[in-house]
Length: 193
Image 1 (cartoon, one colour):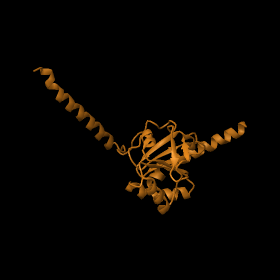
Image 2 (cartoon, rainbow, N blue to C red):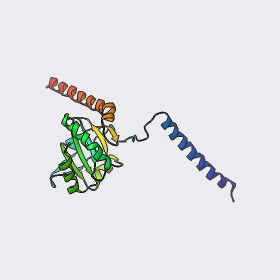
Image 3 (cartoon, rainbow, N blue to C red):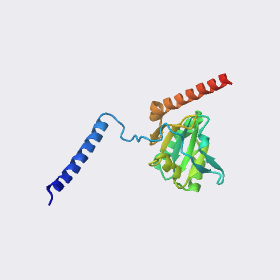
Image 4 (cartoon, one colour):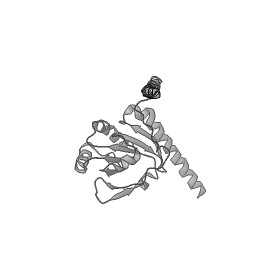
């Protein structure tokens, strides 16, 4: 037997130890282990054509994400965390926050019943029954929320529920920054005209 082959398990083991040490160091440094980076941050919402949840046959495309900053909230009736965040999304919508819902890998009748019973915070409700847009967005599960600027560019990805703590600490400042940028860009466009 070749003696070099005996070192392969040792090298693999040492590689695993290094990976674990790096992860432990990141967690000890205060990095959020639930934060999932998105390769789409800084890029436009992927192209899609999806039906309205309430009106089968009525289709939307990615152009719905242009014109104003908004949140894209990925949710499903099978997701207990989605139910936990739902009332807060209603509160945000009542405060004027623009939210588009993406019903993800769900059953349309259940989703419609959910929104009728719990309230509908969404300007538009997209039905992604097969999860294709979710997959294009890199969704791992529900809930996830994307902050999208007035140009349709994904600016931030939040994994997990939206609640008062993470809204006020992270999401609201980013949303308000996008609103200010959109207002400044509209003012510049008006001056040029």
